[in-house]
Amino acid sequence: MMDELELLKKDWQKKGEHLPKLSYDEIHTMIWKKSSSIVKWIFYISIIEFIIPHLLYLAPSMRNSSLDMYSNLGLSKVVLVVSIFQYLIVFYFIYQFYKRYREISVLDSAKKLTSKILRTRKTVKHYVIFSLSMVLLTFAIMVVGIYFSDNVIEALNLEGNMEDMSMERMKFMIMAVFAVVGIVVTALFGGIYFLLYGLLTRKLRKNFRELQKLEV
Image 1 (cartoon, one colour):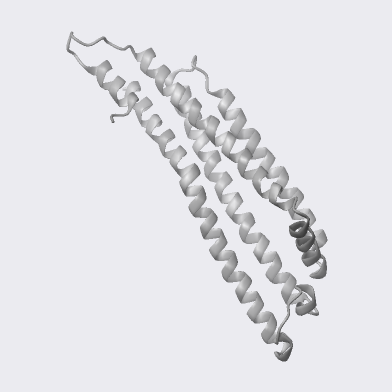
Image 2 (spheres, helix red, strand yellow):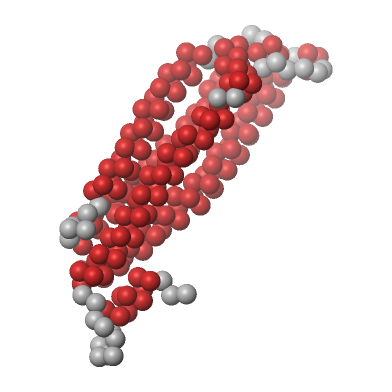
């Protein structure tokens, strides 16, 4: 099915008399409504993305095991500082998404709307980069904590025959595992962000191009 905006644009440009003509303002309003809806969804998704992991963290077993692991590795203070920093930045981005949504007004000219679409796309790009960087940083902190740990087995509650290995070999193996898992998890999150935010920003880019054509 043809995109509604494409149909309206063709209708606006069509010279025939048998179809109603759509003005510049009518097509501009349609692009504004679509852009406003997209930015609203970006704002909603960012909130949902922030809430869901914290709902899982409310489970006593998950919360206690995580806190114990950080404490055993001597990372409690580091993780606390990083978490506070992360929360501040995430709240900042959520506020920016809300602000972008509120900024898009039907009274704006095509030039102003174009500028706001570009700013929104840049904000989303910076948010994705920050989020993926924090995932990598979390695993990097774990790797460093393991390296400086005096007793990795006790710190991570490991069981089995690992006690037969030398401490250096054990640390190297565990650090390698965390490094690989960190890369895989980051790539997985990158794919999710690409599907969610990438789809929305591509639609914004399409609207941006339509606005450019209107300005010609």
